[in-house]
Image 1 (cartoon, rainbow, N blue to C red):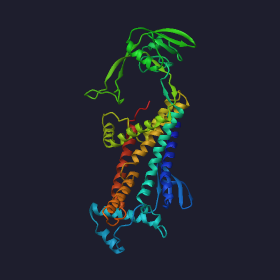
Image 2 (cartoon, one colour):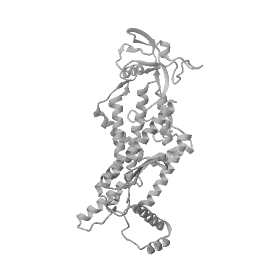
Image 3 (cartoon, rainbow, N blue to C red):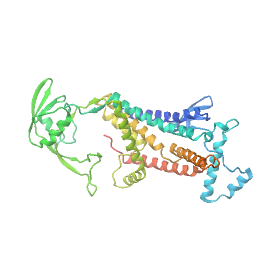
Image 4 (cartoon, rainbow, N blue to C red):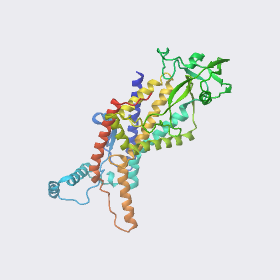
Length: 447
């Protein structure tokens, strides 16, 4: 049940994020006088809708996006042909070039169908370049603001778990990864269980060295090796001395700067033997000042942009893992993987309490909103970045004409990009199917 609560919470949060993204387009469009016939969250058949003024607001059955339909997205063709000439031109169109021309003409026709009498100045293409940019930037910027707001709540309101104390949260019963209440046959009792540690013990000193937080404890364990060591703990106000003998276990090696696993020339995970006791620290929540948020948001933006910029090779890697023996890239998942992450992390943090579950859900939503911002800024139609690129091109061309004292070149014929739009849509559908298959057949482990 906890799993599905996490999935539902993230699904609702994602739908709200999408709805607010579309409002980011809707409000400036209406402010600048553009007529907006429809505002919908989702795609496919309409589940619910209601008209307010000239705009129909509603929800559709497939919750994988949303749209704001504005009249006159594409300007009319510069050269107007008679109806007979247009039909003749279409009949003579051959090959890819002819198909592209016809697709552009169809897009213009559909775009201008709703531009009726009195709407000449209310079409999107009539907006100035700054206003077009405000409308198209509005959606992604809302996602960026939402991401920053969610990170602010996580860092400065709830606080993140930190190992700022030396208190024991859990005593592992067995060596290495065994986590049951009793140890399976052949698995040794953990050194901490043998030594008599109890949940709630606060470690005062380790081998005679005072410990103030868990970093001190970890450092003392690693430097002490496997020799027996005396540990003083505070247990219900009384100091108790325990003797523990750490065991050696193999652990993977991680790069100190990137946090990525270290592999050798053959691609094998590098491991090392380290002293193991079997104590889990009690994480105390610590709130960060609001001034720490911009740095976290900037780092998340950098990491997300890095993933998006390397998306093609990452998708190739995922295809190789799906159809071969290569390991799955854990940094990119589809909508199914996001749902699995929400459920797994919510379920895994159930013992830690509601705040831990809430933090995990908010972290997922903050990351998703950052991904929506970065992804939508890709300068390809039909993404917002494609419309932004078109508006910038139009504005730059007009500015150059002014500098050279030449006539206004007019609106950029962005309808010519429709063939590219169809190609991008096909690629995105392929990516969606690939990630869905990988999420099902080779899922990423989130706990």
